[in-house]
Figure (cartoon, rainbow, N blue to C red):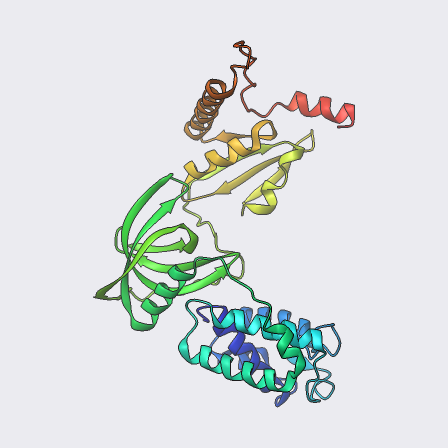
Length: 348
């Protein structure tokens, strides 16, 4: 599997040439040739039709598949030499220079990009001058990315201080990095020596990182297919039942779940599994009156206690007005179906 977006981009560029020379190629054959799964290949093929020889959407790649074979219907239409308008050349040069400054970019890739940029500047002529007055700066977990990418390349262990929002704590641990993945955010999949298990760490939650002298030696593990998302609950994970009103139906869209039963008021009764049920306390607080945890009972009690503590802190900080009087504390967040009915009757 590709370890990051740079590898995927390189693969997709090669894929265009490969498919041009092999009309009607079988999905399985192409996937094996590139060392990826058929699902990863289909994901690449979903992106290619949005690529072409013009920033304005003309001459896009007309590539599709029936799940067995791959067809490219207009290879000759995009074979002509690329001609860029001034604004297209400017945008491309600005983007190329910005990418060349990214931490974690392999030196060979950086040099190749700079060579291509120099050739484009020569071909662009006056447009290159305009692009030199523009710049883009990336704000990201670049330093962490660079260290993780280096550790993977050199097969070295990492020490990290990591913030876990589910437990609201920072822990120190040593990890053997396996690969970098991007699913909304950038993560490193690694073997955690603290828990002696495979774990996934979000890079923007790494507070500190060091590359160690010890060699990285993760056990042989089968890489997960992440096409269905990063969070894939296991059958043995604890079951949690959440009831939401109409305003909380979005939970079923964002959280993988076993079932979502319709409720009479337009809400849902959602059954899901998670290795860390305590992390759903934050969900309960966010939902407020639009939802509540039903079971397990201990988690439901814990969520109610967290709500009471949050309201008590709010009361202490903001209930006293400028005249020294105290206002009425807000009601405890809870899912009140009768209130939902009233709002619906009032058209709100």
